[in-house]
Length: 155
Image 1 (spheres, rainbow, N blue to C red):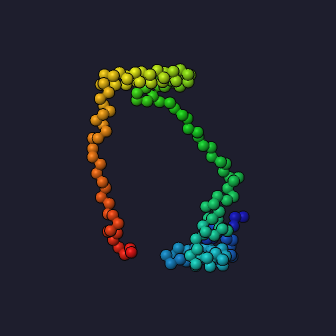
Image 2: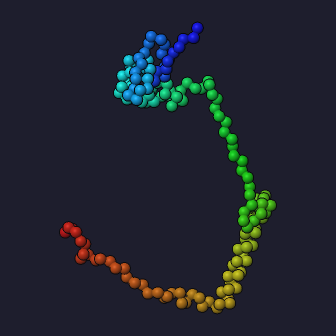
Image 3: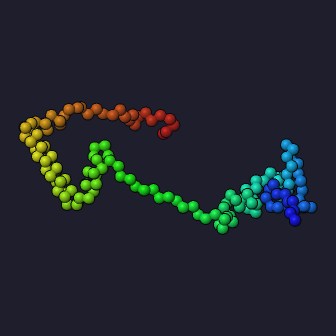
């Protein structure tokens, strides 16, 4: 035999026949309330989600759903290497696989080449570049107010 039950509008508990109250809201919607406590709290316009004993609060705070649903699995993102504008993917892989000593030797060679180029440029110019840099602009004092004009009510 199936018993026709209603749901309480506040607590969402089942209301069996002969129990609870039927309240008609101003807009004409009928609301079933299971207890005087639910009726009182509805009249006070309390939110069901803020009352710890209601099903709305339990749903909001994920209570009692451990056996029904298992934890979702998250997919891990895979790293993909892509070519950069100036260099292809093969070159990137080649550089990554080469040893640190080879890399440092190449860096040292590049530094030596840059230093040699700078020395050649200095020798070609004759060392004139350092002299005129000393006094290219005149130092201008900042416009400070001084001690006389403070403004306001200071003594």
